[in-house]
Each structure stands twice: as C-alpha cells, then as structure tokens.
Amino acid sequence: MTCSEFLALLDDLIDDTVTPEVRAGLQLRLRGCDHCEVTLSTTRKTIEIYRSHEIYDLPAGLRERLHAAIMARCKKGC
Amino acid sequence: MNEAAAPRIFSQPTPMATIQPIAGENEQHPDVALVDRVRGGDVSAYDTLVRKYDRQIFRIAQHITQNREDAEDVMQDAFLKAYEKLGQFQGNSKFYTWLVRIAVNESLMRLRKRRTGRMVSIDEDIETEEGSVPRDLADWSPDPEQNYGQAELAEILRKTIQGLPQGFRIVFVLRDVEGLSTEETAETLGLSIPAVKSRLLRARLQLRERLSRYFRRKKGDEK
Image 1 (tube, chains in turn blue, green):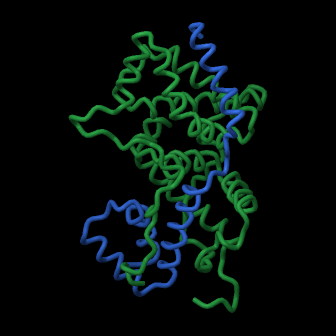
Image 2 (cartoon, chains in turn green, orange):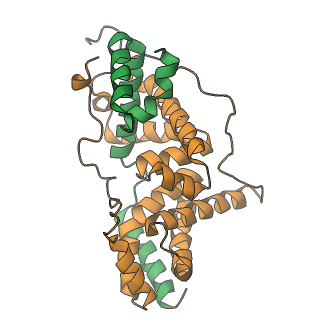
Image 3 (cartoon, chains in turn orange, yellow):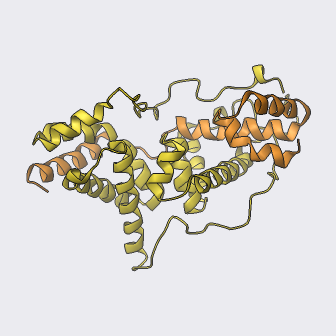
C-alpha cells in the first residue's frame, strides 16, 4: 500500500466503515509509514477539536431574545 | 504505530453531541411526536423544538454567512419558515435534517443579498483537481490545545475554518461538527454521496494542514 492508497481510505478508517481485511492492511501500513501515522492522528485530532470547541457561541441573552421573537410570530400564525 | 496505542476520537462526551441518535426501524424519533403536536395546534411543542436545535442552526448559519447579524436573521427565518411549512414536512427525513436544509438555503440566500444579487451556491470556490498527499507532515504536540487559552484557540479555529472553500466548509460542518450522516449531508445539500465523501476528505485534510501551522511539534520536543 502507498501513501496515496492509504489516503484514499483515510475517511473510511476514521469513520470506521472499513472491513476487517482492509483495516488489517491499513494497520500494516501505519506500522511502516510515519507519514501515514501522522496524517491519521492529526486528522482525527482536527475533527475532535472542532467537535469539542464551541467557536460560535449563542449567548443566553441573545438566545432568549431570538427565541421570544420566533415564538411571538408563531403564536400569531407567522 | 500500534492501533491499540492510537488516540481514540470522540471518546468523551462533547458539548456538540446533542443530536439524537437515529431511531431504529420500529422506534419513533422523539421529534415525530413533537411535530405531530405542533400540527395539532400545540405551539408549546414548537417551543421545545426551537430550544432543542437553535444552537445548531445558529452555528450552521454563522459558518456559512460568517456574519453574526446574518446568522441571527437566518436562525429566526429558518424556524419561522419551518413552522409555516410544517404541513409539507413528509417525515421521510428527520425533522432536524429538514430544518438544516431550510437553514442552509436561508444562509445562501442571505449571502446572495450581501453580494448584490449574485448567485451563491455551495460549489463556490471549489477546486476541481484531486487532492494529493498532505505536504505538511509534522506531528502535533501531545496536547496542542494546552498551548493556547480558550479565546485564542477559538480564534485560531475560526480563522482556519473560514479559510476553507465554502463547499468544503459546509460539508465539514454538517458532517463532522453537527453530526449528520453522509447520506443526510448529501440529501441536505443536494449532492451525491461520492461528492460529499470527496469534499469531506479534502476539507479534513486542508483543515489539518492549516492547523499544523499552529499545532506542530516544536523542534526539540520529545516524541
């Protein structure tokens, strides 16, 4: 397996949609290629960091104001 | 690398993980009962739906419009439009997926207004050539987030994702941040599943490369 072939299966590996046979091949590649290992670990970290950090916060005051405006319109039939 | 030693992703509950799992074949998604109550005239049930999904809709709108005021307007308009059109909701998809589709369309319309009527699509800025093997292959420090304060890290994450082409950014946000499946993302954006997969891979790799500028292990750090 080459780096390009590994890359083509990277998302399937991250999303855990590979067959056991393909996974075994990918693990073999990871043991022998630092580039592929770093690509996998840092891509996983990229996803994790965006999932776990609220970069666009909706402050409580704004949330309540928007919520009140939405529900007032709905009660009037929009 | 030993697979057993690899860091596992999504191993801890996160503040983003608020989306209900897809109900099984014989299991009704809790939103179905709420939608039925709204259709029956119970406005308070809609109140519950708004509170359940308002943060996600606001985030998606902000990611697309990249403007706070626009995101506020999109959030209001999306919930109002969904309320008005609830009779047209077929129930073939989840209420949340249907709502996200409305919010994405409202966000793109808002962008078009800002750009004086020029058409805006999710294909904007997409490059056609295939992605290649990543260039920057430096490993990251063991816990790169610890090198930054919360506000500084949030700014890095915002700047980095804002630099992605829109068509990649929306796919990444829906799929990886908001937790839609590949199929739901494709349905929401009107894309094929292979197109979603291709864009997701390139979005993940581009973000990874851009974040490496901040998170790469400094020379002399122990592995």
